[in-house]
Amino acid sequence: MLELDLQRATEASFPSETEFRQWCELALRQRTADSEMTIRLVDEEEGRELNHTWRQKDYATNVLSFPADVPDEFLDIPLLGDLVICVAVVEREAAEQGKDLKAHWAHLVIHGCLHLLGYDHIDDDEAEEMEALERTLLAELGHPDPYADDETDASPIVTTKDSE
Image 1 (cartoon, rainbow, N blue to C red):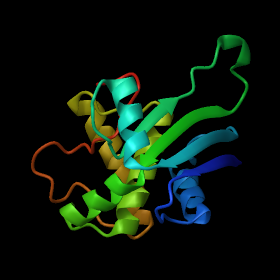
Image 2 (image 1 turned 45 degrees about the vertical axis):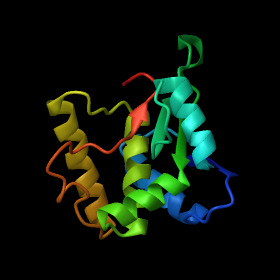
Image 3 (image 1 turned 90 degrees about the vertical axis):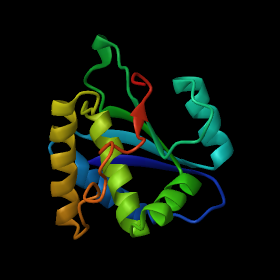
Image 4 (image 1 turned 90 degrees about the horizontal axis):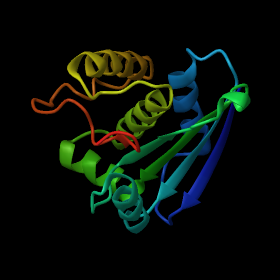
């Protein structure tokens, strides 16, 4: 079971809580334990501030992933972590890349959830594994390969607080 805390810190429009839950549950289905996570939807100002604080980058990025750092004595709690999504960046990227907005939302939520599960794209082998899983999950939703037209860096700007 997924306990999802959806925090709305922006007046911009975004997908429904039902859609966020669907995307998270799809990405987390390999996890047999219960899961708790937060998705915080922010404006560019908060997105820039968080990206600057955690990554020393002075711009808003699409998604920041903050995996829970739970001490060993509390490992039985289902807390996965938090995703912070900058709504304006997601919308701008979809338009600039000619992607369906709903498909881009689904991709970024799934991508962020996979980071919370420990997936990463720092080296090529990890990136290939993560991207293959993303393609499979998005295809189940009827969405196209998000990397099909990307001839440069196949990874979106999604990062974790531990990577640069």
